Image (cartoon, rainbow, N blue to C red; front, side, top):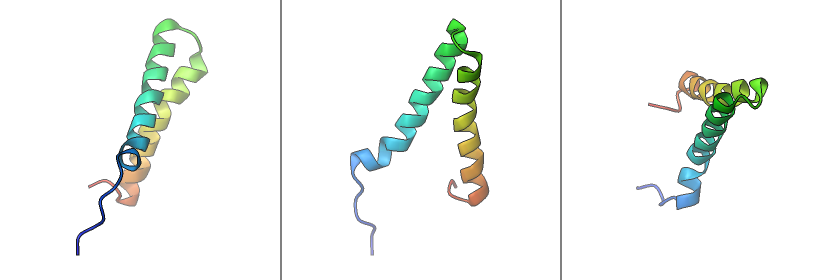
Length: 59
C-alpha cells in the first residue's frame, strides 16, 4: 500500500520555519542587532538537524 499524499503545508512547514530562523540569525549577525538572538537563531537549526540524525529520522 502506498502512503497517502501529504499537503503542501505539511511538507514544507518545518523547512520553511528553519529557513526563516536561519535568515533571521544571519541578518541579526550581519547587522549586529543582537548577539544572543543571532547565536540562538543559528544554533537551533543545527541542533535540530543533529537531533533528527541521532534519532534516525533523516536518511
